[in-house]
Length: 96
Image 1 (cartoon, rainbow, N blue to C red):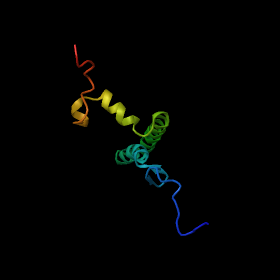
Image 2: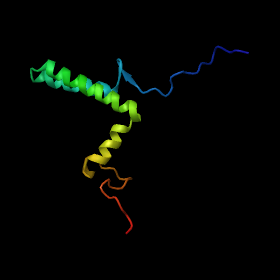
Image 3: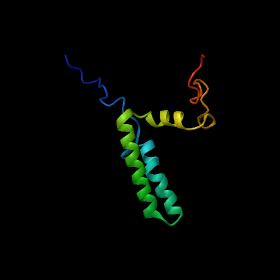
Image 4: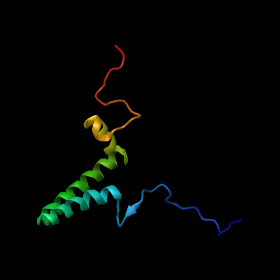
């Protein structure tokens, strides 16, 4: 009893892509390349973009897509992310 009118997508949970990369990977690759182009150092910017893309892919492989956001929470000051629902990351003990 196969009904060909209904199809279920196979890749429903895949992230959105821009060309071949996810949006954060494209920003890590093309951001330094564009800045290098503006500064007449395109090859240096492209190499920095490739290194950033490779590093981001390696970080995402180890802990999922949100690992960079978690690292920003732990290592940056509170005023950078302005998270209201989470406690400050520098507080280690709440009760004496």
